[in-house]
Structure formats: structure tokens, C-alpha cells
Amino acid sequence: MSTLILALAAGAVIGLALGALGGGGSVLAVPALIYLLGFTPAEATTASLIIVTATSATALHTHATSGHVRWKTGALFAAAGILPAMAAATLAARVPEPVLTAAFAATAALAAWRMFGSSVPDREPRPVRAGRAAGAGAGLGAVTGFLGVGGGFLAVPALVSVLGLRMRAAVGTSLLVITANSLAALAARAGSHAPLHWAVIAPFAGAAILGAWDGKRLAAKVSGPALQRIFATVLMAVAALMLADALH
Image (cartoon, rainbow, N blue to C red; front, side):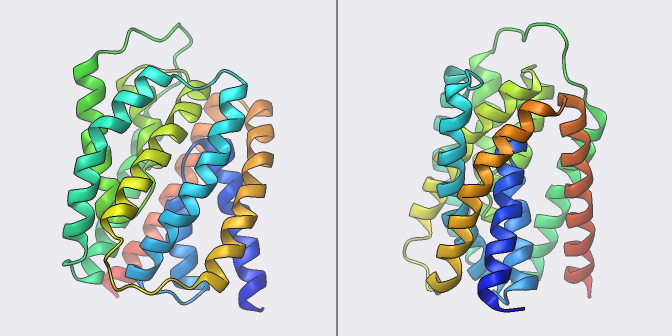
């Protein structure tokens, strides 16, 4: 199968996940770029940030028009995570690639476990405490910068289980956080020497953007608990694949 077809197919799946789940795009994009398209981990993490930034901004618009974005909570998360994201991105350039892959796998597995264990609240969300939101946002920003991911696969569990948002609001709000954190991490990586393969990145991103529109429609038809289970199952499978590779 040609590289272009693989890039388009993978991009469509990543966009669908990001639009429907508010995350999972970059945690799926990184292994797709490595195992399907031959990128190194360093190249894949930078490329995934470009792809997920463009896709999450598109998906954010569609969720915002439906009223599923909690702007104050998202802004607190994003603002607290910008500096940690930039600092961690600088540190990641000095870490051996097997260590980076293992850290990525462990983080994905932890997020999946949290999503399996949490439930979507049926009540109205409790008031958001600024300190709690800022602390969670700073930790999320650091993970985003270090692993080269948008952070939605961690933002959604945090918004649901730590801050008590409903699943649909968590999905929409996480897209604001992903966009801001990804831009900050990209800025920190601007001077890196990892090559950017635009012949792959551009069609990948284009297919992901189109997939995000369909993902938003899918989210409107599937219940919150079902979205959580799908999200957690995919994350666990990706974590197992990457951990096996790191230990190989």
C-alpha cells in the first residue's frame, strides 16, 4: 500500500477519534507515523503535534457551535499548561527514544485505566476550583510537551473525574486545551533538527480534519459511557503495542 494511501487512511481514523472523543488523536497518530509510515519517534512526535493542532482546532469549532465547550475551565487548563509544555518539550529532545516510547505507553495505559474506572456524572457538574484546574492543567501541559501529544487522552479523564464535567462537555473543552498545549509544545520544538516530511504530514492532516467533522456527528449519536469504553479500549491496545516495542 502506498505511503499516501496509508497517510490518508490513518489521518481519517485519527480525525474521527479526535472529533468523537476529544482526544486520542495524537496517542494514535504517533504509533501510526512510526509503525505505518516509518517515522522515528522524534519525527513522529513533532509531526503529530502539527497534525493534532490543525485537527483539534477544527473539531473545537464544531463542538463550540453545539455549546459543549466550557471556556473558563478550558482556559485555566490551557494557561497553566503552556510553560510546563514548553519546558518538557525541551527536555524530551535529550531523552533516549526507547525511554520516550516506554513513557508514552505507560501514560496511555494509565489514562485508559482511569477512564475504565470513572463514570460519567448524571448530575450537573460541580463548580470548578481554580487551583484544582490549574494544577491538573500544569501536569497535562508537561506530559504534552514531553511526549509530543495533544493531551486530550489525559484531559478528558481529568475533566470528567477530577473536575466533574459531563462527558460531552469534557470532550469539547479538551479540544481547547489540546490546541493551546500543542501550539506551545510546537513552539518549543521549533529549533529541533527533526525533519518534517510534508508529503506525508499534509495529506495526513487533511484527512484528519475531514474525519473530525464526522467524529462530531458520531459523538452526538453515542452515549457518554460508550464513548468512555471505546476510548479506554483503544488506549489500552496502543499502550500494549508501544510497550512491547520499547522492551523489544
